[in-house]
Length: 400
Ligand SMILES: [Zn+2]
Ligand SMILES: [Zn+2]
Image 1 (cartoon, helix red, strand yellow):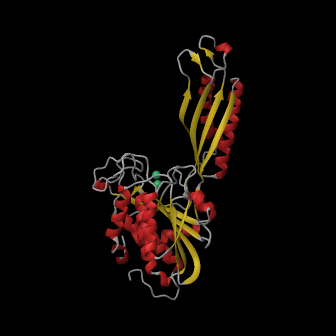
Image 2 (cartoon, helix red, strand yellow):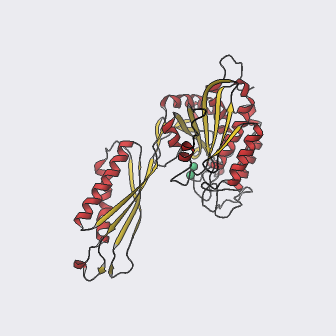
Image 3 (cartoon, helix red, strand yellow):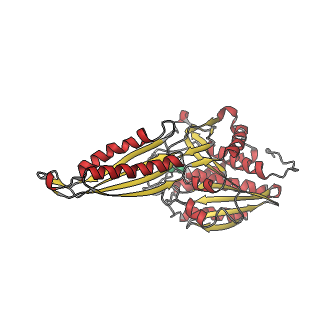
């Protein structure tokens, strides 16, 4: 790992910041304490600050000459989760925990801003530091309101980059995938309406439970029979509700589920097939139906040529053998909405340390990170910006 002295110099500050955010987690758009701290830090650096999307913070660093604008994004929100780690920096707020690493994302981007500010005179172009609320609580998430409130304009963002600390990779590894890397994650709720009555007299009723049972199985043919086997798709039903007693045929049955895909056409096919199959099963069972579809995150698409540049920089930072081409994941990320509007890359910085048993999955009450990974993240943020904005005639060396 090649961490430059200027990044190493901030190691303590970086870890202190991360632990401070970790001890006082906040969720959704209610990031009052966190965003205040972020704002104060950026103000102390002398950046131009904007508050958007309730508790979102945007800091703008203008280089000494005009050029491209690079956006770096960190999400700041925690989870409704009780931390079970016994560490000095354990969450001080009952029922809330930074169990996904966003405390680290926030700390890394603040320190990257401080270092890049010290290079201001060497920059041709601007850096927009975007601190986003509500990544975990989707919909609506924080990215969409930030876009609606103009985060990508004034000045217009040319490229956007974001990091997720990642416990499926060891500290010292960096993972990414050019093209589709994370899923479109949608939600559906189907209500079947029948006619309730006595369980002994089914012929006088319209039974939504039998209809729901058929529908649950029939929906499993969407992925197995209607999607190209070489494409990726998931349809999972996570909630079924109906009935009140053993001898009553109820009026209603509801089914809720999630669908995931890595391609917009596949996504549309799944949606249409849910509609078609539900319609058919409802007719066959003499039921009425209603379908609610909640569109979730978009497919996260990493720009192919910018991915090449991130891979090059990552190889310099962690060494060629530690840059991993990761498989796509069926998880969703609302960074995808920024990447729908401007080209960019979202990549993974390994944060596990299996030897020290720091390798619990994200959203586990035992989640923690190897804090050395924070240095890798800062180095990547800084190096990427310098790669794009460093003056051509400048003798700046990365170890200066
Ligand atoms: Zn998460
Ligand atoms: Zn996350």
